[in-house]
Length: 233
Image (cartoon, rainbow, N blue to C red):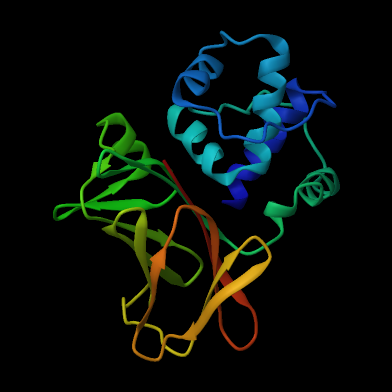
């Protein structure tokens, strides 16, 4: 979302000068709503602004709720935008699909995502999903995210207890054909847990337990995308 990121940088440039730490957790819906309505304290607003620049998940939520008008913003040089982007590692690395799930009373609650979610036969964008207050999924949830040239499809399936199955496939965004011979790797922290080539069209990781994971997708030359998955109770 480079264009959206530039909008946020201009917004921060105009309104924000702060050295306060970036919040470690994603702001909840109530906090984001208060931020949009201007009901937070100056310190809280500063923290949220810095978080929005670093976190693509919350930035998309924010941009879906407001219509940024930067026409009256002072002109900013391209050099300043480039330097500002360089301060935030997520702006430079591979594209990311972020998913936050909660296991609750036998259901999976989809707390947050920046992808589109399949509900029945309907593919619903994340902001619309939130507006309809759709969160609970009994057995599985399928999330899709388009990047430059590719579409990542990720399915989380409840296996029993607190174990999950995680399947990942990648398609060409134009013709939707499955792209094979990609390496898909499951990591927890800096530890590589499993890594496979998707020669059958998809990779399945069985018995994924509660926790935070990264799934990296790469071809022979470079990393193409990443999935940040956080499953908690």
